[in-house]
Length: 277
Length: 140
Image 1 (cartoon, each protein chain N blue to C red):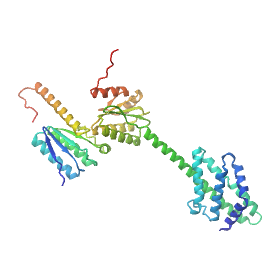
Image 2 (cartoon, rainbow over the protein chains, first blue to last red; image 1 turned 90 degrees about the horizontal axis):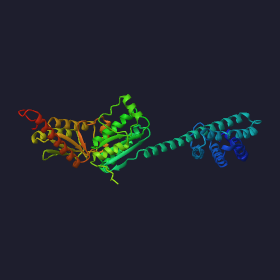
Image 3 (cartoon, rainbow over the protein chains, first blue to last red; image 1 turned 135 degrees about the horizontal axis):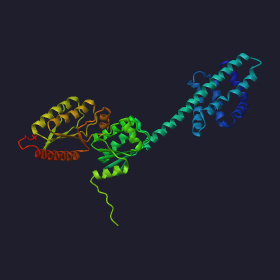
Image 4 (spheres, rainbow over the protein chains, first blue to last red; image 1 turned 60 degrees about the horizontal axis):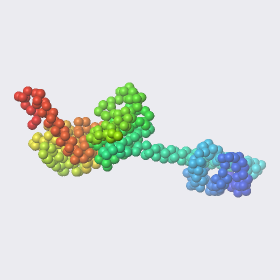
């Protein structure tokens, strides 16, 4: 063991309880005694194993990283901020330094400096790593939600025998369009439907890119041998389409889903009547 | 070398592509089909590509070429049974097969073909009514 590490080891062994309680007092609300104890133990092990503070993926830091991973995940789930999490970890420095100072200041200031530098680097890199891990777990949550949103927002429904409808909700990007296209075409094959209605009531804006995606979908449906109606074009969107000079020629468009359904029924040879009372 | 069979059903020719097409196969089909249309005087061509899983730009262009050739020889082409993946690929390649009629399966393709032929006949009949009796008819 390096000499400064021996000193730290000594302090950690003797003053463990003192450091823990000082640490808890410092951080107050954001502290958790169990987490702190586990982290301090992991830190102690890392010091004993002469961990390289500059290299966060040092095997000697495995235990510390495991503790921090759990910590960042629970904190991300509880909704505390990355700042609070790193603040909690960094707060361990002060009681540790105090302990080291008491032991070494009078006898060996040089070793004190080395020990403080060692602890500081180690805790800093661990805190930094935790913020990264915390961010990653938050990003995982976001991407999972995005995926769920994607799947939820593109259901293909059967409106009538031979008539399918896709109510599109949210912004259309290429990923969404691809997903809609695939599921719609698959359902056309499965059900043998000859007509698909794409309802864009829930699409907030239509720009040239969105229009291009829509055109692609319509073309693919036509290639399969089915027909396509686009419905739910709001007045503002109709104006935007014309202003942008988007060519929707050759595509049947209807103002509402009801209009589209009535056209679909007419094409299928159905007549809707109300029996007279 | 694979050769794709061309079957005659009344006034229509039926082409079912059951293998993944290679460039040579497609070129040969184009040759065979144009010869067959000329020989039989068919007025409709139905191409079933339901077993075709993979297309590239060449095969896509071949499909649209074949239908263009058929229409020059006065035959209507209907492509049936295109798989979703194939449709998406063609769209991404920018091939929309404009001018090609499509249908979901052979049965519907056949009825679409009959319908189109009947319409065309009516159209011809009306044209004949308008044109002077001495003018040669366009029908072969």
